Length: 101
Image (cartoon, rainbow, N blue to C red; front, side):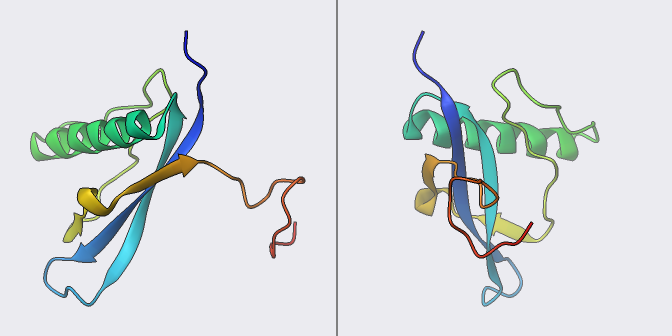
């Protein structure tokens, strides 16, 4: 079984009626590679979108911990510009950060 770690996938977003409004939609979950993380993030987003369009509940967390907790109406995700990498907690005791606990 391949080694799995927690990945973060950052997907740029923009508002469909005002493209000057931009942001980032972040997904996180277990994967064995960046490409798997990108694929899983896109799959859970697509499943969430399909459920919402069908009037169903948003699917829960998957066994590999990927989930989408909601959708942002009026925002479009730029999957071609998405980036994935190992997740680093800003609250980690081993990582210097500007956050105070």
